[in-house]
Image 1 (cartoon, rainbow, N blue to C red):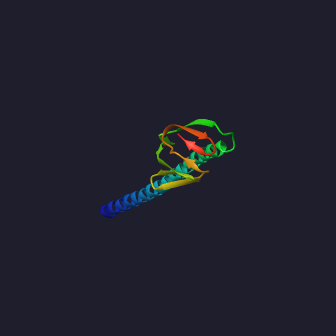
Image 2 (cartoon, one colour):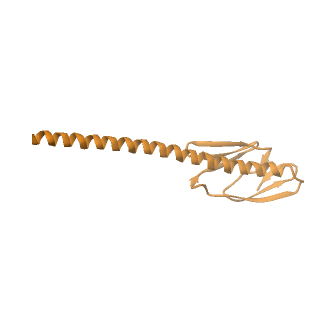
Image 3 (cartoon, rainbow, N blue to C red):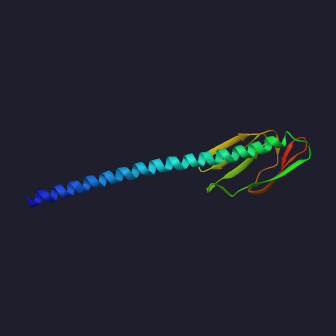
Length: 124
């Protein structure tokens, strides 16, 4: 009788451990999805704001100049910014975010940048 009680106790503990492991795995998976959702939202918002600044510069008079700051990280996510003639790209981890722009010359870098419009958009 004592052996059966000990066996049932061990089975009960094993089932509780299994249930705990399942909850941990599910919680981690949901947490990873939430983190990726936060990354997507932060990069979309930042990229969209930067794109709007570039578009705004093309609607004003030649000679327009504006200083903008590009942070080292967006919502604590490190990233790399690259500039091509008609778009710029934000890369973070395995995610890439591309934003179309008018014709650009120059490159963005982290820190202070100057957007200048003199018939075409320049980044200094």
